[in-house]
Amino acid sequence: MEAGFQRISGETMGTTYNVSYQDMEDRNFKGAIDSLLIAINDEVSTYIPSSFISKFNQTKEEIRFSINKISEYPHFTKNYFRAEEIYNLTNGNFDPTVMPLVNYWGFGYQDKTITKVDSAVVDSILNNFIGFSKIKIKNTGEADKMVAYFTKQHPNLELDFSALAKGYGVDQIFEYLEARGVKNSMIEIGGEVRTSGKNDKGKNWSIGINTPKRDAQVTDFQAIVELNNKALATSGNYRNYYVVDSIKYSHTINPSTGFPEKNTLLSASIFANDCMTADALATACMVIGLPAAAELIENQEGVEGYFIHGNEKGKMDVIVTSGTAKFLRSEN
Image 1 (tube, rainbow, N blue to C red):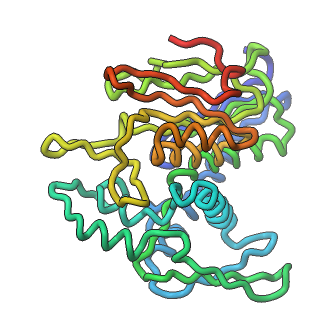
Image 2 (tube, rainbow, N blue to C red):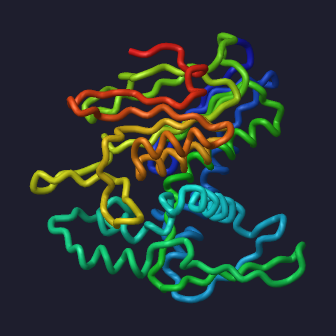
Image 3 (cartoon, rainbow, N blue to C red):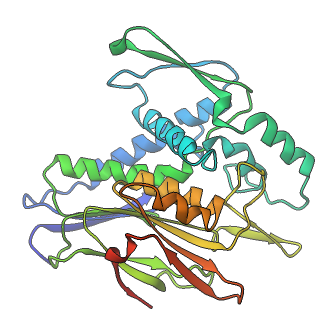
């Protein structure tokens, strides 16, 4: 290993994190990174009852907090406004107000499994609770002392940032290391990755895109890509699902229909300059499927996509956007 490289790891956001970085001062940043991740979770984790997002979800009243330059809740604020941007960019196919549906289908903080689908209940949730437009923000005060009042159109409306929070966590660690002079690093949380510079062998960072099969090993890769100052996030339905009465229910919920999405797209891997964007767009792609997903990513500057889908013969095929080839090292 080249001088100054360290590797640290731990648990966060219901998964694990791994960080490799080069620091010629040989500083160990694990304690600081753990503290940073705890602070993020304390604002955006729906699995922590005392987190700010949980309070937002549970409250039946107006929520008031500062959004000045040093926000009282910076992690929630950044996730909220970036989620809103991706919501608008994807015409609502990425919608963090999908939380009540995520809970209904058994993929949220409420532990349950669907045994019988009630379409009337799904429609009711969809019509009453889903849609970013159902949250209103009223700003008051001067620019440097701005106060935002969040108002939920329905008291049972809830937010879920799980589709971009891991990417956000990666970006926050990246920025923490960068601010301390680290130029070569790889940060990964639950498979979402961002890199800078080179690895300990002086080469671009090699990252695997998993084969989208439930029984595939974590080392079973459809492709190997090389990253330098780029982020990569992958979303898929091949691991997080359950089957009841021969019906498969996946964790990707379509905010337009209220049901788990069913299309031929098995996984979407998105390359972007930051991991939060890659994470959110990967989820949106799984919702809209092909060819719309490829068209969406093709039209985004600095963003590329690698899509694995099932063809009419029941085999796996790959579709990539025009700038993806520069990342591909090899394919199995």
